[in-house]
Length: 211
Image (cartoon, rainbow, N blue to C red; front, side, top):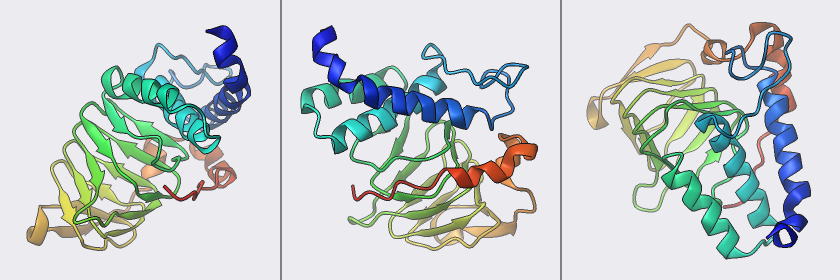
């Protein structure tokens, strides 16, 4: 088994370094210690989720065996509770906060996506969203179909948008035709990231590989 996995060790170490680097921006105690040293603990479900997807995504791009990819995806789906397939592009600064029962499809993502439980980003009649970044998804919220989602959008609990664009800096309420927007005056990133390090977010460009 060690010999079979040995060729993929450099890929894993690259991903581990990336996640550790991102964790220097986080202010919660389980992302970095009091000295600022980043923590990456696979026994923490959020950390494991953040490791597994970019690892399997990069292995997929390196044409790793499909059996290995499917096994790692099964771990993410069953143990971590998140359906995020390795054909979906890598998400920089992805924060799954108790994202059990959530699904993420083949979308385009900018950096910083926070997702809670029972959320859905996916298709409607084969069309998928495009998300600029800075998105905060409350529990049981959904973005479906050909939506262009602006920066710093917050989806309220239970909100659902289908085939409708969302402007920058809004909080989204309601479902379908009853969707309404309210100004979002807060930077979503400040709820997770250290304000003193916020400019460093620009160091993490989106991957933008085709699904």
